[in-house]
Length: 482
Image (cartoon, rainbow, N blue to C red; front, side, top):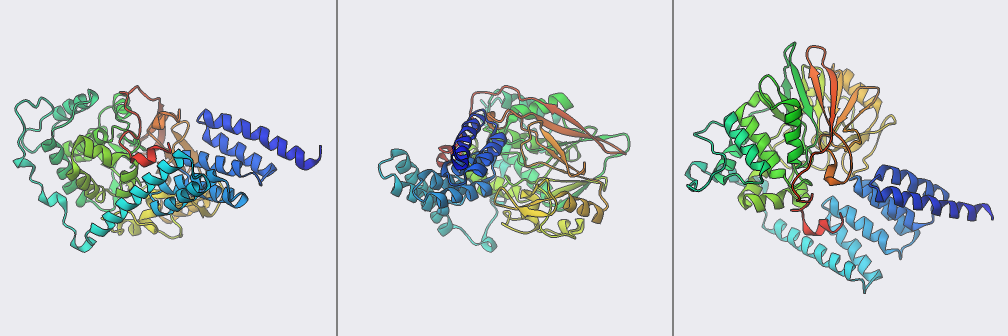
């Protein structure tokens, strides 16, 4: 057997192993194996398309688009290449680009009912988008829905037996009753939901884009990562580490909602705790606290189902008020995503960011919410297709420039719930165990003790939840690709 044939057959064997890893939800391992197969035989479009699918599962949509494009270059008649690229564009909310790819799938497979169905759904989504664009009001003329709501005038029916706020003050008793109701899948009355969200908006609007947190000597402080609508796992964190209070403060580092189907319960719980005691809990914006993500990944549909259309607008307004980063005792920088495409960014630059908007596609705010660390020095393109990847040298310089010791960020699922990188100077923390009910990862949180602020990482496993699947309220169209 000549060398080329040997490579081709070896590549096929590795592809079979990669497919097995994929089926076992070991997507990182599957990517490594597909890469080996590609190195042996780069002219097989299937390997590129399969690797694209694995990247999609890890939310690395930029890499998925690159791989699917390569599959198309290798074999322009291979429908899966267009299909995978269309699905990745879709996941990024790029419906028009997705539509072109699904039209191509239909052209190649005119009699495939699945391709026809997906094309129809995509056309519907693009039409809806065009309609929304047509009726949207310019930013300068937009009126806040928050200003039109008077929750005092909303009547609470006598038969309502759920948690009630007496007067204007959210108490610990209310919060506990509310969490119990949520555990039993009971809804909160809209009057109280409005009250909590509106009080939250007032509180957040007065905060700077970068919030300084002071932890006195002898006290501790807990940082949690993404929760993604996993309410029962959030409750478990409080059972393991205590409810937030002045003596037991927390920071939740963005991505409270989407994907998990108990996002309304998560966000109302976090907001109610902040209303109860502002210094007990700090909340940072993640890339999923945005209209475009909420439209695709379930929160918008869930809010419509459990509350109302008006709440969709209200949450979008409040998410624009969330701070972008926090600094603990002038030493630990906490942000959802990561660092920047340029050197020399100072904390004062972050404080000066006008955050009261939907996240832009570039610039400091975008990078704070979207960027990821990389194992090699310098900067590179983001696997996600938004933001960038940054190396240990970038981390080191940012810390030196700002007289900081450590970066804590979230944004990426990790097998153990956390990962320490960049010579110990950067920690990723992710608090949604068994993410999307299929990743099999642990969750984690960090407890810092002042004054030395040594990070103590605690990991935990997923707990059972009622049988409502992740993405249950998501855009129909996207659910087809999960």
